[in-house]
Length: 500
Image (cartoon, rainbow, N blue to C red; front, side, top):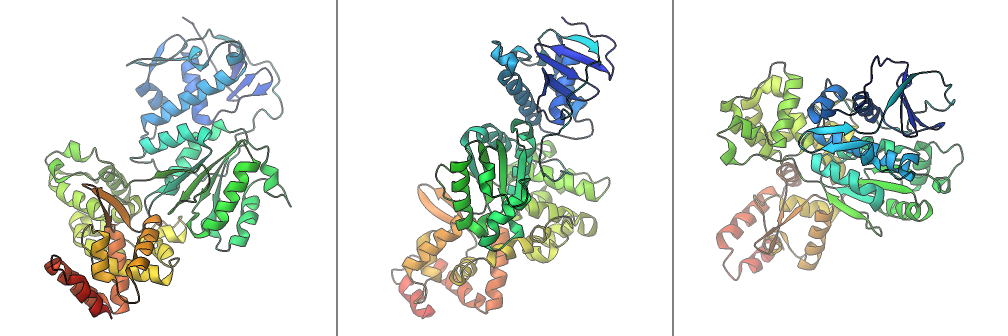
């Protein structure tokens, strides 16, 4: 057991080949600084100062994140990063791995198990020792809710998979998850992590220039300068530049073997060895959970709504009589984080009952967005506008007509209701497949049968567009006729004649 006494800011803690300079918040291996993020250094300091003792997970979280509510995965990720650093350093080459420095004590916590000795700061430090890991990540102002599993999966896989794509509809939180993963991997990459926001450009010809201008490559540099980089690139919002992004990513994977790429997009890039990770909605409680406040609060959609409502209205608290209304709000908003955040922002003006009553008019209700967000993330309608405007005219038409379906439907049902001479079955099938790839229509398997479904928010948006086109009444009647006569052999023939 180590006995560290009178540890002050000018103390240096030595273990193995490492020296931890507390005042400079720096760990040196010989004269080389280790690349550790701020949270990792905080955790290491707590463990080293109490070397030989067990520090519980709760205590570590309380010490390192004193004013935040964070997931336990944050702690596990930083512990794993510390172990990786010590395993890859001289300490690992001397026959030890990271666990010989930081041990997991089952059901109790963690313990720093290597011998530690302390001394006063007397050694001059190398001039570049204070350099922080390079990045251009924006400051995160709020905790992330309900994404532990997907964040953990990405953090574990990215360093070995190299190219992963987060896919999902607008408002699902792809950028939020990607930036959190980048934060947690900051200390892993020698040349840092870099977000390249492609929503800022529309011309594919600007893609390479935008990338090189975002990265610290110097004037006149091209992508060849990334050949030796050990870095993570977050290519954010790629869906409107798919061809250009596909070519760029394939080039980077070939020419920069130590580069990892995390893509966010509403559809896959379809590059070689791309690993797709669909981002699901937040969890909405079932009706059976409504008898318990604690049970409802265990669902991530409700957690997000309550946390944002509290930020908006001081003293907001969820009561048992509110459970049905909150569940209905989260359900009707499809568990989409953006929609839930925008709804919670209205809590002081409308209260829960008012929010629930306004759900059928959701795009007018959800208009008070985050002024610091890019325009297409400030409101739900703006986010859907951005997707809709990039569809081909026939894709827009099909999306509008599909909105008359009030629940999941098969491709046969879609053919009966919306196909016509100008939209034959062969074209309709390929367009529906395209809309599914673009995350505007979701697919589900029910007893071996593939069904399509529009999210409630997407359906409301498309119905509004169908009404503006003047065809809403026509297709509502055709849908009603299909429901009433779906078993009649002539139903499809009648529907085609009506369309013509």
